Image (cartoon, rainbow, N blue to C red):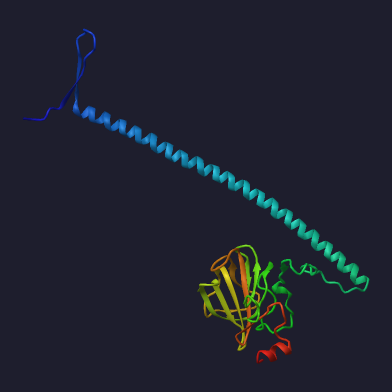
Length: 264
C-alpha cells in the first residue's frame, strides 16, 4: 500500500453546520512547518545577537567615556608636574642666590615613631656606591612592619613595605637571580645574589619579571608587588642578608662595625 501524498484537514463546528475539509499536499504542510521553524529560529537569533550588540555598544560607549576621563586626568597631572617643576626650579634659583644648599626631600622625616614610615626610593642611593651593593628601597610605600632579629619577641628578618598591587619592584643592587619561584611563606619570591657576601629577597609578589639565572642591574624592574603567600594585604617583604645573616635594610649594612660583626 503506497503512502498517501495528501493530508486532509477537517474543521467540525459546534453548531449544526456541515464540517469543512481541505485536502493539502503533505510536502506543502512540511514546507509550512519548516518555514515556521525558520521564522522562530530567526527571531531567537535576532534577539540574541541584538542583545549582544546592545551590550557591546554600551561597553564601547563606557570605555570611550573612561578613556576621555583618563586623558583629561593625565593632562591635569602633566600640568601639575610642569607647575611643580617650575616652582622647584624657582626655589632652587632663589636658594642658590641666597647661598643656601637646599635639596627637596622625597618624604617627610618627622613622622611619629608609632606611625607607618615612608620607605626611601631606590633612586636615593648614593651615586658613588658600588652597584653590586644593595641599598635604598625596592618600592615606594609605607613600612608596615619593621625588622626584628632573632633576639626579638617576633622574628622578622626583613621589612614589609605596604604598596598597591602591581607596583614595580626594583632591584636594589646589580647581581644574579638565584631563585625565582613560589615559596610557601613568601609566595612568589625572588632572591638576588649581588656578590660573595650580599643578597636580597623580595616576597609576596604578584608576578615575577625575571627568571633564575638572569643578570639584573641596579634599578631594573624585577617583579610586580602583590599579596601572594601568607599575606593579609598587598605589600612587599624585603630582606638584605650579609654572609647569609639578615640585617635591617633601614640601617647602613656597609659600615665597619656591621661588617666586622658579620665576618666581613
